Length: 548
Image (cartoon, rainbow, N blue to C red; front, side):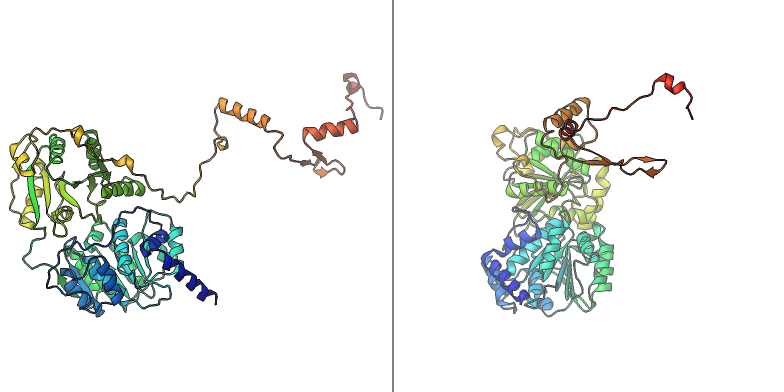
């Protein structure tokens, strides 16, 4: 009876709250998170089948229709018929082609309702940013279905996520580390998971999550549906698929001879000197029609240095790298998405899972390590049918690395053109106004900047500062102030009574117990009964022998 009333009350609350806001409030996501609503922004053809024609639940079709999504995207058209039947799938497609709904719709379609609160589907993603985005998309798609979606990720306290798991969840989206922690603490039950998704598997491999993924796979039942999605298929990912997937169907959203890079992205490669790169970057950021821009660096130190230099030159720039705390990274991403800053300088690892569709330019401040890194970097622009610009600076000592990337991707630019900040072809290629310098003109400094964004507090306010009087190390002046305060507040302090016991030769003497009281009570007792004066022997008496 109590459980039925609890379910009724929960249903009444959910009926008056937006599902996205409810899920975010339970998961501890800030009011302004880094995800965005479900959007119909991937390329779709008029002859593509609709979700309703593929037999998707009417509640899901209705929610997608409210977001403007009626027909399937390329990867979804190939994936849904197989995934809806419960078969294992390997989906290979580039970033920004609609892979989330490719596995999200089958998960929501095959969830048993009403559930008992135990997770039925598990989605593993590499980063917190991607976790938030996938959770947001699936929550929007399940708006009319009643499926509870939970986002489990690191960087925030455990308590809120544990409370959400206790309330019950049908679909879990999480990062490997936090999923393992909660599973080992027995807060997350994986014994009833029937559907498992590994999203961005190649990125999880690059981040070193492969051992954690194998541990998670060993925790879920053997009888399950497994879907693996990845932009590239390196050897370890193929081995993982052969080990844990059962007769999977390999699906590619492009033709076999299609390039790995976006065709609608204009790519420029310049051989630049390291001393001239800051000037070249400052001029490139003044190109016409430039919107949000991502600048990639190989090291955390370089990323922070470039961001600080751009800020000093007048640009609204922010950095995202591993040395920053989670709150600072979230602050930079929110400011970038809101347009308060238009230049985001990031390392490759920190940029994993950042899903922003309005990026017009990507600049590789340092040459990428390999072809996969190059594909992931420039995949941030030219997404969802839009056009983009990718610029790569290659230093003299990076020419061999670039030659390898060029050969593997077939870019046709083995020898970058030697370029300086004053080169005419740099201005012509990128559309830089003539007369531009290394500093942004004051008339163009219209962005609010990073300081306009508040940083999220992730410690839940449980840690309190120690008062100034609580420290045991004080200077002489502070000790004097403390003594003065003690004298001032002496009357308001509670009185403490202390009992004292006297002993002689280790034997407690009866009737010798005394009790010390406050000065006021001592004076009062002294006035009632005079104190007996203690007799002292003189030196002559001490020297005289005893009569006995």
